[in-house]
Length: 349
Image 1: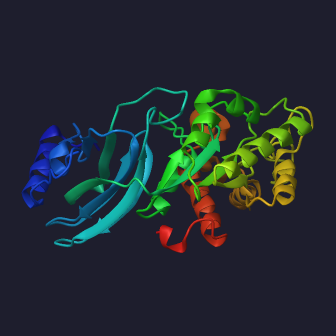
Image 2: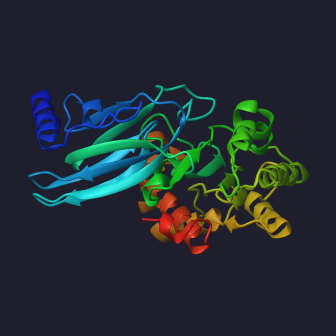
C-alpha cells in the first residue's frame, strides 16, 4: 500500500525532532539535514556532496515507536540489512561506502555525483546520521559481468549489489562489474580493468568472475586472459580471487543442472568453471566455486521454487537473478570470504 505525502512529511518531522543537532565540522556536512522525505513512502533520501573516495557512514537507528530500517545507496547497493528496533530503543550501525564516478556500471550512466543514501525498510526510524572520510579503508574489488554488477533497474540485481550488507565499517565493496563483458573486453576497455588496476592498493582483495560472455573465447585465450588479470592484480599488491560463474537455471528432465547451458560450457566446448578451477590451482590463487554452490542451491529448490532466484517469471530470464537470488548468492560469497580468511573475521556482520 502506498503511503501518503502527509505521512512521509510527518515521519521526517518526527526524525528531525528526535535527532541531535547536525554536525558540520568538515567540508562534507553531516546529519539528517541532508535528507528529505520520498513522496508517497516512509523513506528518506539523503545526499552528501563529496568527491570520490571511501566513506564511513554511522547511523543511529530507533525512535519512540518500534521500527525496522534498511539502508541502500548509490546505484541500488544494499548497505545495511533491515534492522528492527523496539520502542524507545537506539542501535548504532556503521558501514563503509565506495563513492566513484560513474557510481554503478563503469560503462553505464554516470549517476549523480557525491553520496546518495536511501533510508528505507518497513518502518524506518533514524535518530542520527554521520558521514566521514575513510581514506585507508580496504576495498573489496569486483570484476565481473551483469550477474555481478550494480544493476541500475529493478528487477535485475547482481550479487555484488547485495554483498555490502555482510561487511562492517572498514571494508567497502568497489563493484566494477559491467554488463556484457568477457575476459577479452574487460582487458581491452580502459574504463574497465585499467581503472581497477590503478586503484588497487596492497592487501585489497579482487574477486574475478568472468565467463557468461566468453561464448566464443577459446580455452587458451580464456586461460591467458584470466592469468593476465591475476598477475596484474598481484603486481599492484592486491589479492586476486578467482570465482566460478553462477549457474543458469536450466534443468534436465531428472531435475539436475548437469548440462552445458546451466554449467557454462561455451560454444567452443570450453568448460569455464573447470578452466577456472584448474587455473586457480596452477596459479595458487584462492578459489570461490560459486558454480558448485549455486548449482547445489538451485537443484535443492527444484524447477518451480528456483524460479524465484531468477527472473524467470518476470523476464523469462534464467541467467540474471532477482533480488532474492542475488541476496542468496551474495551470502554464499560472503560465507566463502569469511571461511577462507580472505578478509579479517572482524570485517563481517
